[in-house]
Amino acid sequence: MPKATETVLEIDLRALEHNYRYLKGRLRPETRFLGVVKAFAYGSDSVAIAKKLEALGADYLAVAYAKEGMVLRDAGIRTRILVLHPLPISFDAIIEHGMEPSLYSRKILREFLEAAKRKSQTDYPIHLKFNTGLNRIGFTGHDVDFIVQHLNAREEVGVVSYFSHLAASEDLNQRDFTQKQIAIFEGISLEINKKLDARPFRHLLNTSGIINYHEYQYDMVRSGIGLYGFGNSPKIDVQLRPVATLKTVISQIHRIESGESVSYNRGYIATSPRLIATLPIGHADGIGRQYGKGKAHVTIQGKKAPIVGNVCMDMIMVDVTGIDCREGDQVIVFGGHHTAQSFAKDAATISYEILTAISQRVKRVVLT
Ligand SMILES: *Cc1c(COP(=O)(O)O)cnc(C)c1O
Image (tube, rainbow, N blue to C red):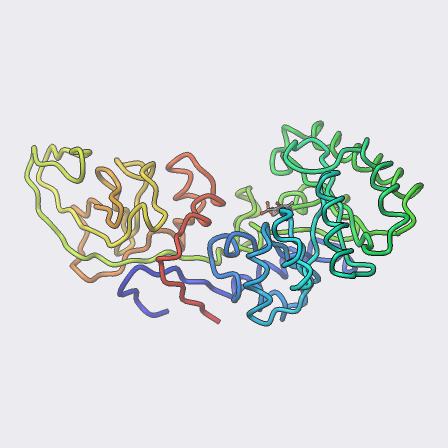
């Protein structure tokens, strides 16, 4: 791997392949696999990731919003794309780009039916999202009769699948709650089977669901964070390989004396002479202020260098006292042993957040 000469996010497609095969290996061979590539593929590079998942044989991709899927279609991705959270303003674009909406309320169902009619569709593929306890988006069991009334008589759309999403699949203290969600989903299944003319398939599990509740894999699973190398548990994390590594360089080194301060509002005051390195990465690149003031650290020459003082828009300062380093040396912000998960934990957040925060200003380098 080349040494970084500016701030770069390396995307390792071999790690993605490893994670895909690991997750597939925990499933029945016939279970379909949906790769979640929303939010720039968890902050990495959605086109590169989607192309690799397509080559690996993923059955579906998922994005949150229509625009994210349009980028994939424009890049030549032909795999089926589920749009998890479509808004009526994008229904025409969804149909024009051959994407499949997740419909989650009476209003959204009615409006999509109108869009499909306006665009003269027959049997246009749709998916139904049910809320079983996350209380985010979704129909409830009470909506089944409405759904059936509106869909059984209509030719414009065809239900391909229905699904729900677990609120706490990673938390084994919440097993009872999760089992309740599963029971509600099973109840909805009975109703759908009894009343809907179509025979859709069903899916429930995200990454931690695959790990902790694989007996409920049904016909498909939806994995995001696991593909990117994190399993929300130390036991699984060691089996996976992080896809993204964030690197930068030392732009300048200062020697400061006891009593001198670093960064805005004098967020750090030295109590002894220190060597301070300035790095070309800041909160505009995704390193939020919560990482400053000694909370998080980066790695230089294999050693920990804490972020000192407040994070600036375009720079952070790190304490390199005692580290044999020079201006121009490579810095690992996260990656290797100090993963995005451990970096995030130091600032009391989660891998999902730091990964998706890395802004589009940071150059992506794809390793194949
Ligand atoms: C984001 C998302 C997923 C992926 O969850 P991970 O924990 O990253 O595996 C699955 N399903 C839905 C509905 C989602 O919104």
